[in-house]
Image 1 (cartoon, rainbow, N blue to C red):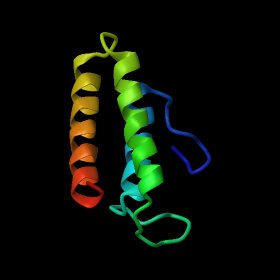
Image 2: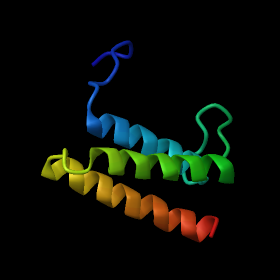
Image 3: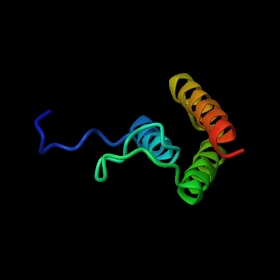
Length: 86
């Protein structure tokens, strides 16, 4: 894939994009624009809720790999959210 090609659209791409945004909002990954790592509670809360909506709306329609990915992603984001925000 060259720099101008977008990644394949898939459930996992959407999930990992949302997870990355969650980690940026939680200060775990530096913001690619500002290069700083800061916690944005409002954004972190929104991204966590959005991940829960994704899980709820896709329940019963995921293959084993997708189900494992969303389960582990939610566990990780929830744990970091709890540690950093409460």
